Length: 199
Image (cartoon, rainbow, N blue to C red; front, side):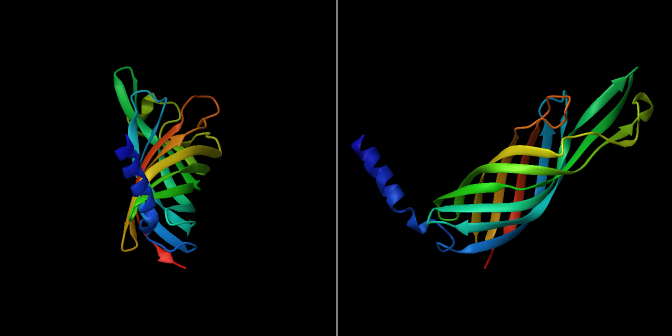
């Protein structure tokens, strides 16, 4: 037990070299990637794959801890199959947001950080597109759907930085209902590549 405690103390005593950037520094990071989204309560749904892009800023508080915030355009939603009278069509629920992730980042080894935060999202558009036999669906084709204007989620993830390039993978766990009359919440996995500019 003493050996385990000693090893843990040695590990934490050496974390000063883990950060990529100097304490007190600030950087901006444009980033772009892919969003794999779904809705939690939609039956037999498939993910909607889309774009995520934007910019984040990061302030290095200490050798192992930083705080970041940003604005990311995120294509979310889900796909499902609609069937009636032996006919079927694919319905794509398109929910696009400007998400504002506010993250705490802890560097566990040099360049590698784990992160957790809170994320308000502001709806840009919400539509449903029907592909296939649209005659079986009322209001077929493409139509606006009513979704909540603000969405809250908890982003949790990990990132790795090398030569100012950062690969980031995070999962956004939805907290609020997407639609006023329904139980669906957003469930989103995102992978992005960014580049940090020190200011």
